[in-house]
Length: 400
Image (cartoon, rainbow, N blue to C red; front, top):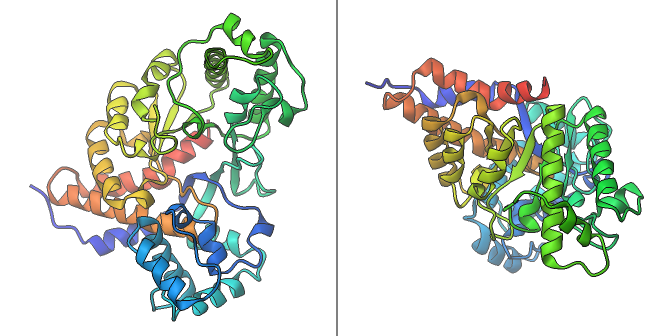
């Protein structure tokens, strides 16, 4: 038998909890200066909706844009966040556009406004920072941003001209000219260890935007061919497989988790289940499976059930689809230990980070109170689960 639980009181309890955001791409301070409504929207996931954000304040253009994106999860939660942050009761429209724009511009005259949003409004104690434009950077705020080293560039260092989807090449980033695979792997290992010593708390693989996640065992001889002139696709694939093996070997030795982007991207071999052979090969490596693997959301709960080294990072999913996040979390609780689930905002601005927080608190409230009311969870366990996912589990990762 379940018990009646006050959803509003439970939501208030969650809102009071400190948070460690497990994933973020927060912009540098100077990129927040002078930001208005259009600029904020362009730096958000709303800009991924295949409809350009209006440049000016033309009423017809704004209304047409709102009709196109106004029901998308990305927009709905950001609008809620902006109304809350800036105390505007009217929803975004052609008539209120200037009010939102003025409030945002005025707030960002304070050069620390973007940080105040993270610390005070979002209640973040720490943020895992994936600065993909400068892998391993902490924006000069190590007390808040805990740097993550994005490893994509390592897979594109077989020559000087290859690039990952962010335009990065490992050899160019490190100022090296290496043509020998063993020397390349040694250089990789040195850099990875240096990044950990410099404060990086995770390695991040976002290769779903570059290639499939199907990593077979590495082959040194074939990988060497990739470092020659005019490498063939099979040789590049062998090189990248060997690179992934080396990254996982180092991650195991230095006890650093691997953040794995799953789901959306090229949508080609990007579902989480494709990583099963890699997860099985490295049982001592903690794999943080990100984004719910959307739209293949049952993959990750299945992997969690079988592999104790699989953790779940719910970042981004509540913004992509709140309803999918509710289904995913409800299923996940049935099969995964409470101490292997974390959440991150996965945004570029403080405003959208707060939007992501609102979306996730909605998901947590719906799922946990629903399970209490149906007798699937005790009320004390629901409160404990909320604290663990919002803070304690990520703190355990930072304390490694």
